[in-house]
Length: 290
Image (cartoon, rainbow, N blue to C red; front, side, top):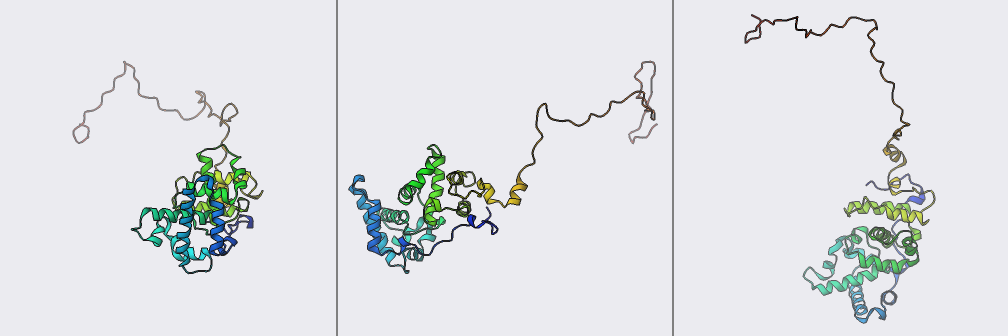
């Protein structure tokens, strides 16, 4: 998949990655209070909230030892973003107990869904997705995602489309209404680079954004048209076929041969009449007549 083209309108360009935003500049006490308010609830049981509180504190302890001014700075400096699925090895070592990894995974869920850090697509696509993406939709923009959900019946295809839109929101930040055509193209490139299963055949996420009015009115109606430049898109469209059935025109038939038409006489084929007998001369093994 080719990268987004330079000649696209400004409304189609992907938003640049921000260096700072309000959530990532908070101090530790502010981050902890905000995330525990968003992601803990006694109605879901104290054990879950205890694990979330412990996991958040473990992860913040580790990130505070990394260089940087913001939490995003520390996240990137730690190497966790580049490590993808194995990022917990950097904090714990490869021989760490499984429950310690679980704590860190719980902590990073809160930081990501609370938009304190914005991981790369490389990192996001390597994680276990379902829980993180569902939490993110509820925390980031529940109304925006509810409008998208109303456009299609529930099912795996709709969930897949919503997940792709959620990845954009987690990586770029902001709400659903801020997503651009360029953001969609950037995600398509990331999916193909990651060899994500079904990346080429699931354009519904783009259709949902277009139908809901998130994308501008002059945006390409389909994802494929947005990926290809206009000249190439038109050249790949097959030429229209002539209609089939009674209305199909056929070329003129060749005229039938006439026995009375003038012209040189055609030699008659050998006669099969029993009254005429033709004897061929015998030949030798070399093919000469004897």
